[in-house]
Length: 298
Image 1 (cartoon, one colour):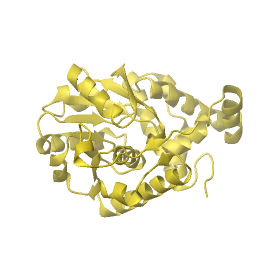
Image 2 (cartoon, one colour):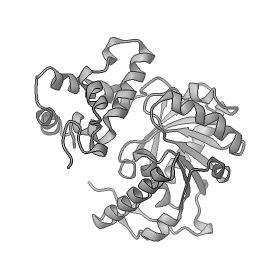
Image 3 (cartoon, rainbow, N blue to C red):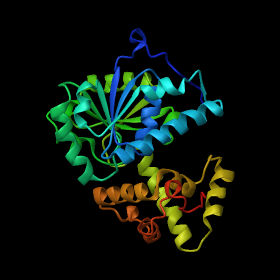
Image 4 (cartoon, one colour):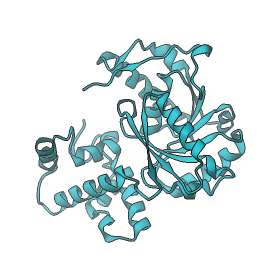
């Protein structure tokens, strides 16, 4: 069933509680979060490291908005007005205007750990930092800031505009009012937040990454071709897409990083990344975003 997204008239009187939202990272997830925010009445400050990345993200956002309107998944969306609600910038200081921040950079601790001390100095005291991660510890991220009680996990699902559920992860220091505020923030985007504990992988990825990784082992061991692995899950279990097509959509590089975090966090061999997954990432076969993964998209 197609989810319908109503565009909210962006007048001052109609502004949601978190009128301006900082979104860090303009990749697939960041663009999806920006899309959902801009079409639900928020102003967005989208930050990334280069003008080239931001130009690409602007084109992707325009295409996403146009596509959803074309296929009836959105009504009453003014493309130009919605894009005007998004500021594309490489200047982190622009986050000083944010009422709430969602960070979406790659699943790499060495990348994430440099961001939080920086935004902690820029953003107003009390502003919530929402970590959009599938595996990294929220407690560990909170320790990088002077506001660990205002750091929370928000694991958005891809594609963000069409997924109504978000995992909300409570770190060790995350305050109750931060959880409540985050749920209100998500409700303002038309999404429901389900609170889970801060263990690597949380609920969805602790199960999903094992499934995908084992599906890669099936291909590696010659048990079945990718199309047949996916067809079994679609036909027998009613999944809209199989595990390998899902991996291609998320990005095989992101899958590998997530599995590696689980492996390092639990010290359990069941999370050992499939060698074929590593080889494909090294070869630049990252899925849809590169045109080829377990399936071909060109």
